[in-house]
Length: 481
Image (cartoon, rainbow, N blue to C red; front, side):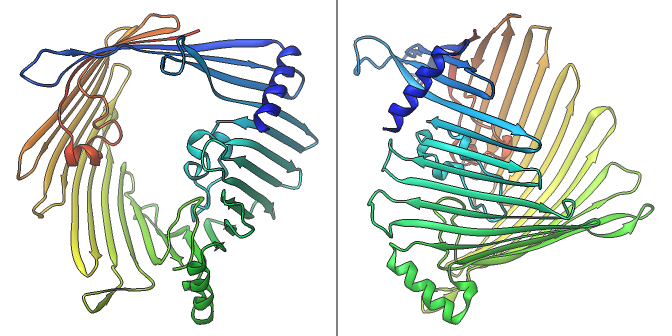
């Protein structure tokens, strides 16, 4: 039914509006060398065509539709135009009061709600793997308040329903900001108690340079009798162990002066009860701890020292080998960041993590260095990391990225990674030659795997665990119209 309403709305809009049409095209061709026993294998050419249509049927309204071409011939003897995503939106504002409403299908961005300390909402947990459809309503008034409500139907998945509500209010010239969350996920079983619910309140107070923020949340899973009974028992004993989560932080504590330099200290603490469950966000439970983040600004020097300490453990211990263990984790992070002349920047860091799991201590000590420089001609990034220093599985990882603008339309990019441990040495090399035609088209000639080190360079845990070089050659053509 939702799809029918959505299609009818879009059809009416198309009849009464000027239409803008644009699109994207990508073609990829490649060969891969998999073994010394046979020649390079050519890949099946990969073509992707995407078309977008948007328009504004009347003042304060607009619509958007996106299709892509599907070449899966098991579904049809001819290529199919598959609906990818779309929405229709209405918006109006007058004298500081306004509203916005969006009806969407297969779009994830409408699930986003301003972040919280406890991670109350996680878009990836409520968007039905990108297939959710529903509506979003935003209202705001001139007294510094606003409201958001989102509902969505998981018709492409298990049939769950999502309801997200958020209200925000600013008071006393923005010195006090507060808000509430109400979220509920109904399960496809359809029972009256088949849902997960979270209610939260956050508060932010600004007094001069001091800034205090805190959030408290309560959860409920009525269909899970074990969790419900656990929460009821803890409420009689210690409410912090029940279905409640709390997180707080204080900023603005400062020592020193202009001549001696400033030292900033930001402490915080958190607690997730053993019966707390949030399947729509950050689902942590049975954990509490604190952190102290500090940094020092060296006077008259572009140098910053960072020293962060955190400790957390379980609230309810596990029983293993006739003993109880709270599995504490202690983390100490230190860093020195320096800005040199001519655009050079450097960083040296050491992370010391002592983790207890089932009564056994595991040490994860990491040493990290970085040097970077960027100007109009080129950009260079070099990193080195010793992962799990002093342990049997110690690894040495070195990485470098270099991007050079050869000419107005030509650019070359290179990324290299080398890892060495007590078993073997591995490497990965990727290079790309890019040509911009000057219009709406680009051409890429690539060699090697592009994914290793793409996010974090030497901090890529995927490469650290099992990454290796693959001989691949790709030609990619991209175009916009």
